[in-house]
Image 1 (cartoon, helix red, strand yellow):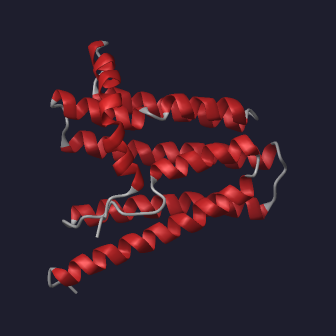
Image 2: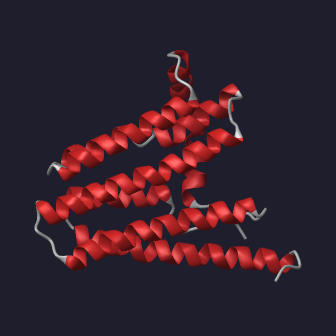
Length: 202
């Protein structure tokens, strides 16, 4: 059974295209950790732009700066700068990025669109589901399990988020993100359970 997620397969397929870009950024003096920090700063700006009532500008920022999530790892592997701390920093900043854009979305929906409690609940559910997906993989890999499977990983979540703010179908897309995030969490739990049984675990 292939336990590799779509985003991981896409990353491998696009690696030859991303490598020249990563090397160009490296020649500018940027390190992988700097790219991770720039990426988070871009998400903060995108969240503020969205909160101020400009969803299209937010979407444009996410499209432009979103690839930094992949380029930092690409540069790290190419230059031999990959490290446990770099992986930890990148994963931690990824969680902050999602928090900021969902916080920006919640403010935008409540203040600009005058949405009610149900929409707020959908935002919280989508964000919580996203965090559960990330946590299950981190915890599983810390215990020595392979756990990259999943129908909705970070890449797909960001794509759906962008579609939500561009189309204006916020509740619908947030519901999809929330539901599929929880499905992904259970997928990962099932995969780890099978591996644990195979290894003689409980």
